[in-house]
Image (cartoon, rainbow, N blue to C red):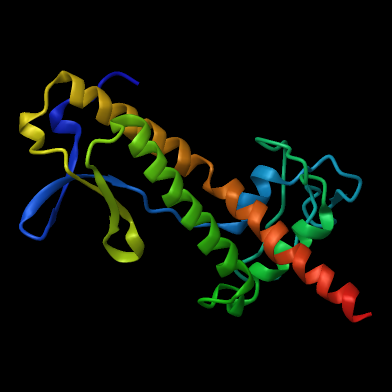
Length: 205
């Protein structure tokens, strides 16, 4: 990405001043996460009798919001748990339950919170990587912290080419973090929720 211009830097008004900001709103949409990371080459793949398409978690044609939902085609990535069909089936079933997103202890809300917390930790590390020991403060603002605000950089109009290059680098690092959130969500849904649930079941037997 080429170096940004001052006019490209978004600003957010907070406590009497405008600060450079980045839109970091992100929604975890489980069907998309399954499409991205579940391995559709696993043996449990089947064909829908109605439409002939393949998919692990096709729910049939009921006319509801999940009508014709399945994993089709290849995946963007196949990770170490991509063929764990038990997990992906569990994740899909949890998405059907509204209480799974209840704060703070819903199964998917737990994964959501962990992924976002780690994302913010990574953002702080990115700021240190770009600006070093310089006094720079980043924080979330707006509904659900959807804006990453940076304080301590002075007025954008006073930035020189070096500061613009730093900002460009920082925005690219934040984009990389955002791109990794879906995988982080899936990983923590598996390790910190699903696998713990299995352990508790086994201990209870």
